Image (cartoon, rainbow, N blue to C red; front, top):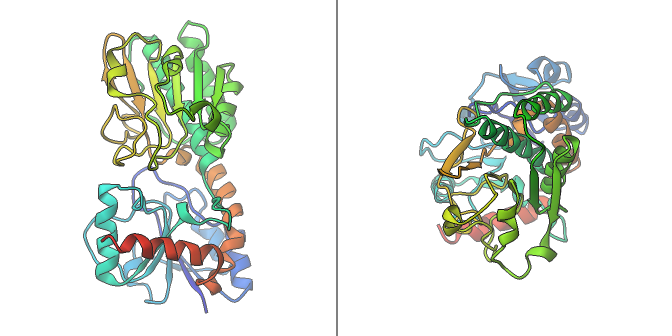
Length: 351
């Protein structure tokens, strides 16, 4: 019997979950055992899972779960160095040269567990089968515009918090832009044809922001890209990978430019392939941007859990995409799970 253990997220400002009560009920009907940890922060209350027939467990007890349980979460585990003996489904951020990722893989090696990384859950053509990308782009563009509006008033982007939904976010942001006392800015979105870029473009267009949409065709020559500096905002929706072009090099900071806000939605500052190498660390909900240059200012927004700004919508969308594949957890050596396992074992050869 497959035993799926849904852990409570343990990082601040992370309210999302990868399965809904309705999805859990579907798994149980197939014969799976589903345990859901209690959580006061999760966007979907624990009572809904209990009513669906799930077992519940205290928050943070997944290390003591039965050894055959598959631990399912979204964001990173506490970086405490403990060995990891279970199979884990999550976003590990460990396969693109991230230095913190190597520590995580060493923990799996020590414990004998396996990382089935959600970012590498792909179909036969290599396309991801489930992603938060749309909502990451949507929220990332929103926070970037908050930073731009704050600049216009001589400040820096204030802290952010969750929104009740898309409409509430758009209304709040519209008021901020209006209060700036200037016309709407221009934005360039790179990766505009993907999920992330579509979300970013949709948010901009909902607020009357003029968007230049670039994708692979426009960036194939590998740079430099002076057009980026001619826009008020640049929203990067391209994942860091070997061979990725550099969009804003360090020397651009002091160059003549209109650009004043970078929204690095992909957010891989710890990667050797970071296409926006002008900042060193992800930003936070308490400090959503980091100022990398003054006179004229240039702020970088690089929050790494953006979809949690709209946690209910993001969770329901992602869970609907993932559920058909969770139903296949009884065949871990096949399909998307088999490919994810092969990716893990390939990278473990380097650990």
